[in-house]
Length: 128
Image (tube, rainbow, N blue to C red; front, side):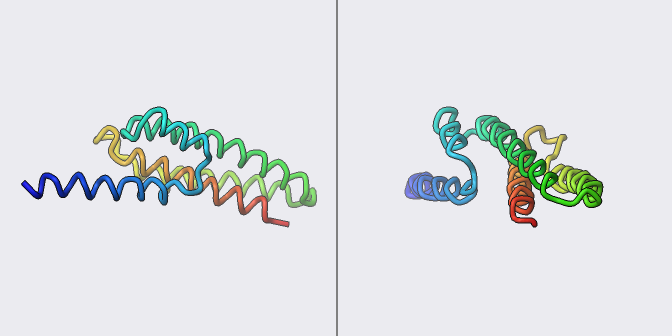
């Protein structure tokens, strides 16, 4: 009887902590999305897709601003670097998703894409 009560109590304390730390860099819109749709896998993936789109837009803006700041002879290098980064992230984060298990790894893959996009945006914004 105690075991049945114990596990939900642990989950009640651990899940909010997980969401607060795992998605700490995410936007307020992500939090609002989770509040609206809940924390099921389907809802989290839906909210993560919206977050990734937002983060991708910020990355594109940072890329364009960085492109405008650098010397002309470095622009092709930046284009090539960004293309290689996209291939690397697609491979790195793509391996976390297991198509055979349907949604298995989908949250992990989305989390990877968002975190890597956040890091790349910071890199571009902080570069000279």
